[in-house]
Image 1 (cartoon, rainbow, N blue to C red):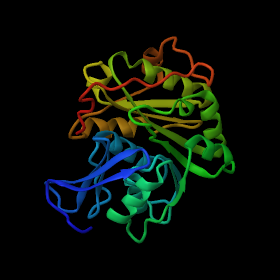
Image 2: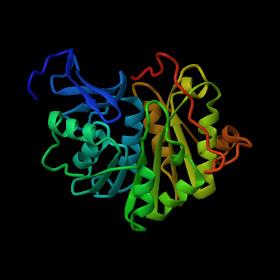
Image 3: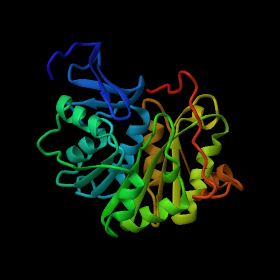
Image 4: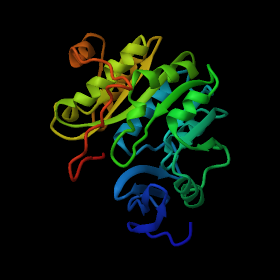
Length: 285
């Protein structure tokens, strides 16, 4: 990657969805943050792909660790590519996993491939296009995990928030498969409550993991949701969250019942935009 500089902007380029910027991590010479229109999108450590800097990505990584026996290969569909942080993580922790990525911004994919090259053992198949259209055209029973981390600007596309979309996701999952979703929310977490209710309309089991301050409405931030038709790793995820440098709270069962309350599932007919963040939204840690 020519022209690397510690602590400063390395590359700035126009991509299909805005302006992308790669900024060097001042503490690690082979690590970079990808920003899109000044909003942090991904953090990539080329020297250590198992190092997950963003809080919510660490929660997704924990769930990926727990969905199958340690080190066992799995099939993963990533909706949203960014810096390809999680495909790198899966390749490092679960060698020989079959991975596919759907990313709508082809220019961003080329920038990441060129400037943050993938390791030899990490070769996901990448499709440029719309996430929902891709899921609806894939074969049934193709994946063990589907991860949705898709934002158009700062909003989740409404077509990825509905019962109809999750029905399509459930179709492409193998028996025992798991759906993981990153959302961003603020005071009251009304949008997240709707997403949990929507997952519960399609899947038998759900959980939520986030920072307590986000759940209490003290700051705008990320929440990770998981859904499956079989048991979810609630106990182990809770242990990991409690022992983390920045403790995370896991909600499931009756506690999640109270969180959702009488919120109704979201459908294609009722979907609305996800909440807009404040000027300085994410206290990424």
